[in-house]
Image 1 (cartoon, rainbow, N blue to C red):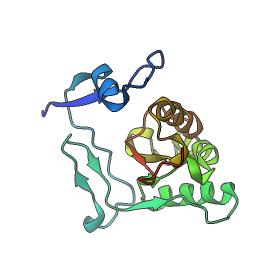
Image 2: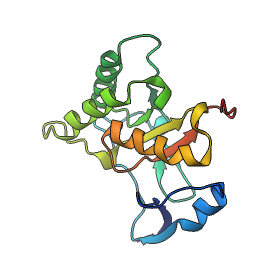
Image 3: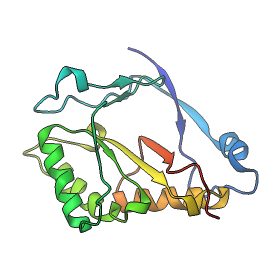
Image 4: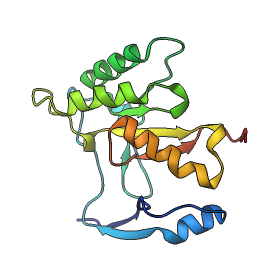
Length: 169
């Protein structure tokens, strides 16, 4: 069995202040995991060429995913697309607070996770979200991330990115 170290999320009581990323990293702790975080294989399986990439943490990130930008479509349509993609075998979903559909996607994901007939669980899905340009300031990033977690109805994100490298504020 492989043992890896991952960062443990900053607790809700901790605040990110003017110290920025250095202080944030200093407040993080590590814990030892006894096995790699590898999602279970999708059913039906995706083609081998899309199986995934093993990250330096030992976690398997699927190489094929669904972007959830709705392009002007109602958020409910994007949520329906997520459900259908899960049924087809997709396991990576690229979300963002600026898409204004994370709440609907979260509801759809919970519906699938609670459906015993499909046997798909949160640990089987790689969720990515992104912080928008108005929330790049250290004091805003944490709140934006917590909002995405709440809207997506999950305890963790597998990946959290800066949407664009340009801050508006």
